[in-house]
Image: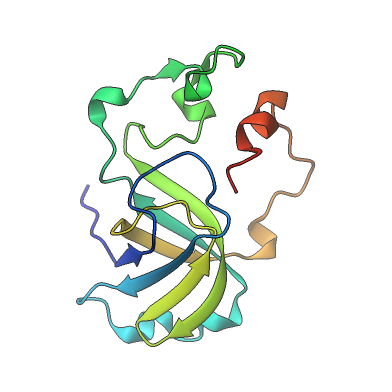
Length: 149
């Protein structure tokens, strides 16, 4: 399997810290080999899903189960029950607000990727792909996320 970067992020975050991502505005610029037409009419959508690569993640820190953020008050959870950057394939996924489109660049808000992160794909958010029922999650998630955005 071969994946190639289709764009790169540009923002003020140079370190992958866990909180305060809500006001981060990110410019995403297409890679040189991707034609400008790839963004044709993207501004007709309010939200996008950004799939990106945690290229700075440390393979040595990847564990298949552990307490989220090492917090002893949280239960041990498998890696596929967490959204941490240290994961088997280093893939990130985030739904963002599309603020602006200018040629080969889009401006988004709410992307938890640091400056220079390779973007692997961009998809528009369709209401029809969103969950149909009630979303269920453990109580610890709300505590963990209280300062994330």
